[in-house]
Image 1 (cartoon, one colour):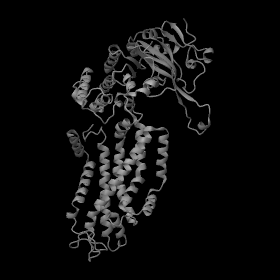
Image 2: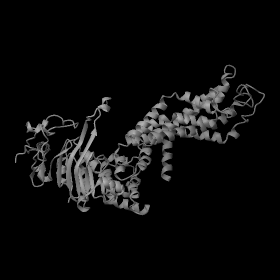
Image 3: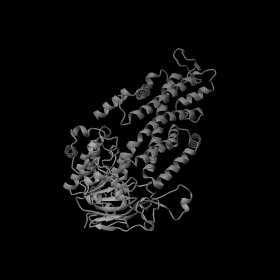
Image 4: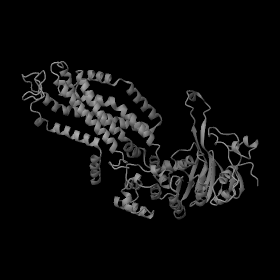
Length: 328
Length: 283
């Protein structure tokens, strides 16, 4: 059985028009941020989640860490529901599941030094028995993460450090708790290209050497391909294609994935790419459907597509796509 | 501890307003401590030389209609003003921070209830309420302080609520949740420390307001009659304003100076308590 199982995870936000009739209306409308996502992961696996902004990637990430409760569905870690885990022992759940946020400049309280910030989770989770021991742990971890001189960094305030340093500290802090499931919510999108590699390598090291499952949320397709074992493509709250990274990138089946990948810049400037243009904005996630959510913008859409949401097909072993019009 | 001290010193050197405010408060405190030495007369003693103009021998700011020495009264009035300012501002600050912080941080129905309570308090004409309570429960100085405190907290609460509302969406609060910290810990370690500084600055300024309110109450004859306060002096001098201006004038100047000191302190604190404050260095 898979280590992490995401079962029909759904997050609907009630949509308010701000008018008085909201109160009396029975058929409430919802923003379907995440709409029935099914995924599974093994230990030590990196799952890349890609999609354009607003497709529910970050909401999915927050749901996995239980920063938000799902409207429907559940996430199982090692066969146990996270809802139960967090009720039974919230601290243990937090030690199991950790998140690295997108904005490193805002991940730490601006009023405390790095030392204070890093001491807090150690104390809270009773790691190390004395302050001296905890300081020693922090120092070692910072040095291992390439943040030298550690003593100097520990005395600094977050705004005195660079984004790359802060993001490394953020990962180090998550690693203190020795988590087995890590969500990285666009961890490098706010960093310079030059420091991205460090962060990526830290995450890969986490998965490979600490046997942790990593969800890597990103909109950078090339990067996702490099880091992940499997890739899930999201569109408007649903996973439209899932498979191994190479398979999905090299042999995309869903028209949305095809369009995404065809628009991805190649390193070879002379390579001819037939880009597939998608017209229009993504439709609003307020009560979308019926029919395929992508149909209004899809180049291959036909009448059938507008009637019911397509089923999930296994294109090749382990490679799934949600489209009725896949040419085999 | 040493680091904190040196930082205070650097901030003190760099910010002119803070320097003015701190020195002003220290002077006021010294005046309170040294009052018996500084004042040449007992402000409660009544002499026969009444309505003596300033510059007279022995009473250089003159005397009032009861023959009390105006200068000595001013000196002893500092204590009253500072006491009123501090205690009422503390009450107002503590109430505002806790209620506003809770409302903004917890959100949902708690926030709605808190917001409505704040709005109700903001709607009530404050000064009228103060008058009402004072006339109902008597005009002791303790009553005055408490009443000023519980009528001025909504401003602080609104500030704190807005801060908490925006802070709880910040990544560091979310990451604290993800690290397993409890709601109480987050409120006291992240929301309050990061959101309290506008309130601190506002509270220092509302100290100035409290001094003025106490003066206004005394001016209307609702102050504590057993205590010497500047407002009381202005009130008493009112009837003699055409013949003996010095009774009201000097106490009025004293009120203005003290208010300015607290304003400066509040403003200076507001600058310096920002962690990104660069101590006068250019960017």
